[in-house]
Length: 144
Image 1: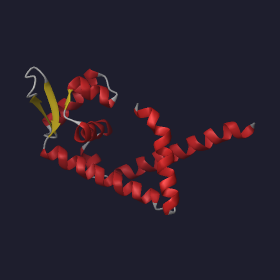
Image 2 (image 1 turned 120 degrees about the vertical axis):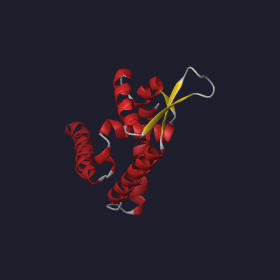
Image 3 (image 1 turned 45 degrees about the vertical axis):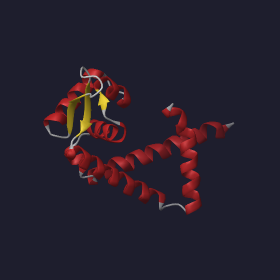
Image 4 (image 1 turned 90 degrees about the vertical axis):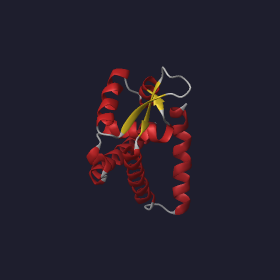
């Protein structure tokens, strides 16, 4: 069955091409001139799902706690993140975005939205819907 191996290979090559193009376009994202890739992941995670405790943020980003501490320390020094005491438990320190962090996250989200639009424009409207529906089906297990 030669096609049983060819289809996953074709799928992987498509994913790799998307990643390669995304990395090339990365230089056009003003936000990423100010943030490293790991820092942008932290800013996006805190902005969309935060605030977080340090351990919660490390888990959400798939990082080791000591690695996350270094990233957060750098972002706090640069005024992108802030550490605040939890209102419910004063022993708990939460990480949230500052005004600068919210602006950086909004800029990055705008760039990603425009990039996705450019990719989708290559397809007809019904193909766009089909692609997104299929991607949602294959990625749902990665989010659970």
